[in-house]
Image (cartoon, rainbow, N blue to C red; front, side, top):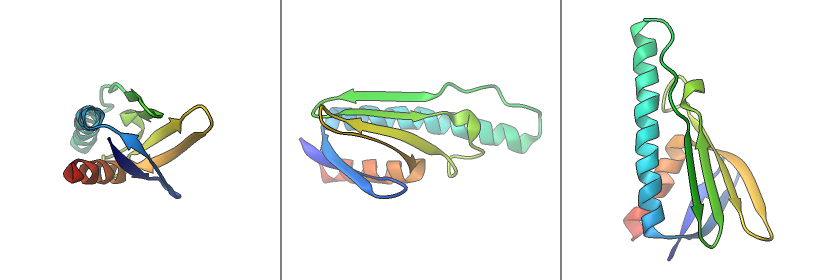
Length: 114
């Protein structure tokens, strides 16, 4: 099991994360990106309010508990989107925001290492 480093808006957090969980998170982010792009495309067309999209809620339990949440309905584009991250174990809990684009970069870098 390799370590994943996630860069937050202020600081970073590193923890053990397995390949299968990383691939699942990447799939969830791909669905989120599709939702964000649909919202941005609809807004650009000027046809009123877009249909509400389902938020992304990813959970992983391993050495730590990781939760990644994003509501695509509040961001005008994928580049503006942020995710709420919670990383906790029995002694520590960190909750912070991270830029979606930075999360994608961190995850891709992790997957390339493996």
